[in-house]
Length: 74
Figure (cartoon, rainbow, N blue to C red):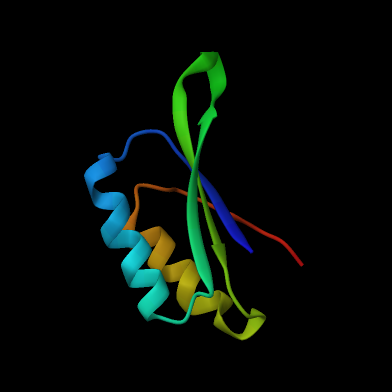
């Protein structure tokens, strides 16, 4: 699982990032509304994929979104 919080991305581009990750081999991609620091609205992006796809999908997350970093589960 690759996850990142997004707070400054145009929501119209979420679909593009989703499709790009799925075409690259992600098993599932989803977005969830969250509250960030100082109660600012944000979005949690989660990408579920095999461990062998971690590097390529991480690159997609970093290039196709406004994210500056990410967290990965084991």
